Length: 309
Image (tube, rainbow, N blue to C red; front, side):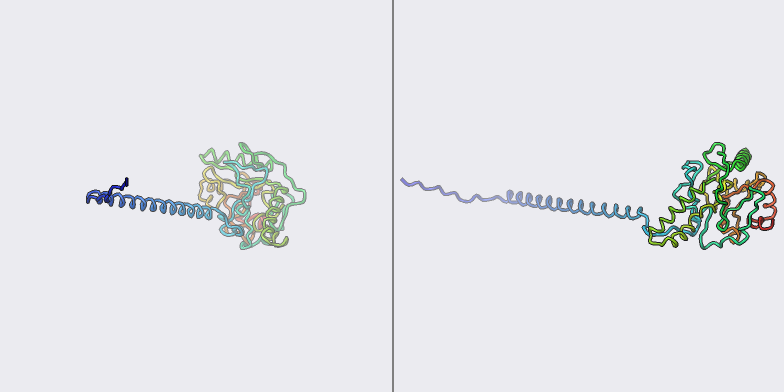
């Protein structure tokens, strides 16, 4: 008995079903296209984020071999580095890592002190001179006193005079304050040697590095801050130790009354050829009331005044 398979003719697809299948294929094609676009968009987004992060990192990274600026005094070259006895304080200090250019700018573009700077008045310790040409005597160490409401120190008589001057100024509604004062010669030596090493690491010889360091950090024993008689003055609203301090009411008060308390503006305008230091409206030096009044009336710098004695 033979078994014959039944005839199964191919089923015909209706036009409606054909259209439905076409729609489904088109829908799947669009879904695949959308997925590819989303994938490409994600990849592009990741690339853009990476580029942005790299650019931000490049902006923040400091130049590696750029020597310290000695123009504009960092704004005229920033304030002398603070000593170990002057820890950072929100009110009365400058960062220790900053070069001491602003407080005593010895940039080679500035005329150096004239020969009169080697003249000293040994009869009055208040008039002792310290500059690039005149280092302090070996073993010099002043008797110190801490300023009122401060961790900073000055020579005892100078500290008492500054406290009196600040109290008088603040009683008028001002906010006079000390930002930098005494720095031991030992600490000055540390800072100077560290600056030398920094230049040597850039490939300079010992001699070249020493010369470069002297344009940024005052040679030990030649800084006014080593005397204990100098103070960088600011106000509670301006502690930057910059030339714009001359616009503060505290500066105007000092111009009129500082001499009464024994202080003189140490580095006045247009005297760089004599002092070797650019104009510093914030840097005051104690010389005693009698000396201060005579120097102020004469219109001379400390170097010029001592040369005439």
